[in-house]
Length: 153
Image (cartoon, rainbow, N blue to C red; front, side, top):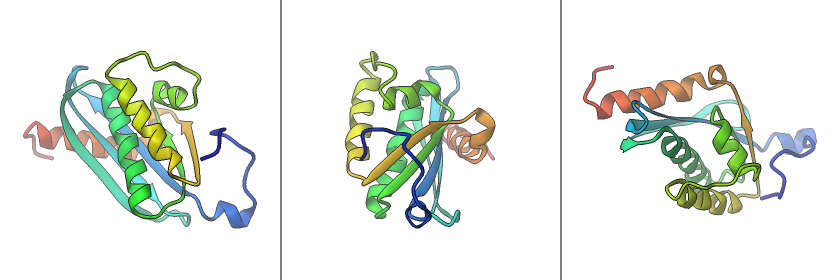
């Protein structure tokens, strides 16, 4: 892992080695029924993973971190050494970049584990997007919440 989450662009040959993951988490009630969704693309832009899980009653920030942890674990298990993560959680992105402190005793262990997992990769970058930039991950998170709440799709 590099020390800076946003570095100069890679040369074309190196740029072709990056996987991209869009992750999102949500909670209905905050805290309330929660879940995450994520989509992982290979360096050619093909979807190689769709992840989602119902998390029970949690906060939206807990769900956001759970999605991040899931994509990091996916990268480790599938040999993706370079991972760019896109999230609509400005809080989580800024915490991962060290711009915000992690004061929550609930989020702190999740943040620490995310840092550990990111450190197992050769390169890791993270960026914020607006909600519209994470549509499929949002859809998967909502489907996980619906399923966990016993609702039909």
